[in-house]
Length: 566
Image (tube, rainbow, N blue to C red):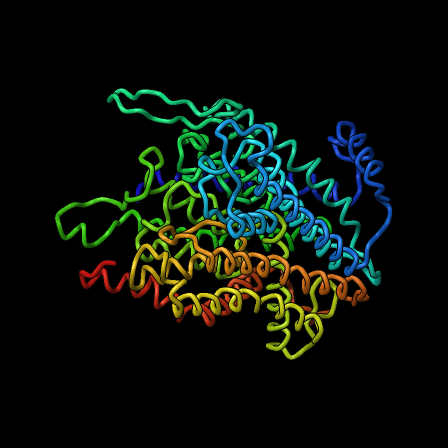
């Protein structure tokens, strides 16, 4: 570890923190229907969209109508992308003349981008046309992120509203998320990345002769525009297979820092939006504090492990950090920071190969996802996932003091806790059951890149990533029919089996009357509550996943200390 390495971490945290209040305030005004500084620019466009789509922006939706709109829009988007992937050979902007994607892989890919996961069992530069990249993948990067923000805002309204049955209008929330939040930052970010050297063109790939005399193919295409929204929307699917480890997608240390800022800034700022919408900013800062503490806990474990390197290499007299699978232009510190940030959110983009991390260094990204995508989480999904754990924590606190728990003036009773538990149990069920099946059948072992604990880690990481809608991979696990189907199901479950009880919970909370705060009301923005919230999250994660993690990264670490590798 070095001082410069920690200064990189501090610089990222400071620039994110600076943006939390202004961006959070802007989104609060936007989703409350108030005028913003962008209203003169995008207001007419917004009205035109409503007119063309016959949307009544004043029409409020109960939770089940809001849910139906989310599901209907998502699955129409899935069908659109699946058809595009299967027919790209007949469509324009395909200078490389790529053919159609195989049916099972197209199914997996369409689900992946619909659910904001962006799991990639393919290399985009070798299989997808420019039209597919732009009109298919990049479009989904916008709308899947906007769905997450919309659902989060709807859930916050459920907490903020009093004795009503509606959560807002999904179509309005979706439009405003794309138009006022994602699109402006993406346009400016694209220009910045082009300045840094990221390609943005429609040229065919260029074959050049290197200094050594070898032929090399240089990838082009509309890359910068997709790079920005893949980070900003915490999507993660790269234009090329190497993702943000590629010098085309991420050429400089400055672009690396900027892309890290993109993947954190909206998720972090939504905590401030929440505090403003419930009219108590202390609640939002409490969530931000809990998220930040958990983020740094992961970094404090991961960075030292990568900086210390492999003990077997040290026995040979070679000292230094673990540079296997890392880009020299970023080094250990920036690679460790990215691995923690990309799995603390639901982004899944990588600037180093997680498969090459040390055993315990690679354990951190896995645990980040197994906790339920709630450290900062995806745009929107991180906030509503955290609030579900807040409700469970409030219930536990109520049991401890022997009174009915309350949160934001609303009593948390049996129905609310049951729906919260339904949300939470999705993660262990969707991760552990298919992982157990995979290690027992030939198809699950057929495409493993490693044996022993490391091979098990590849399987466990894949299903953890699918459920968390993260999309990053440990590496080494190849595609086949079993994984295309099972991981696709995991991505669907991780998105929609959580949204269903979540919006039902929002509907229940919205209809509740507020109760007056009393001397016995548990303060939900104090350091004690933040500590209790973090403890609840880790206890639930530890109880469920520690046995499985012990068979993978922990067992591998202990074996390495004994001189055995896989």
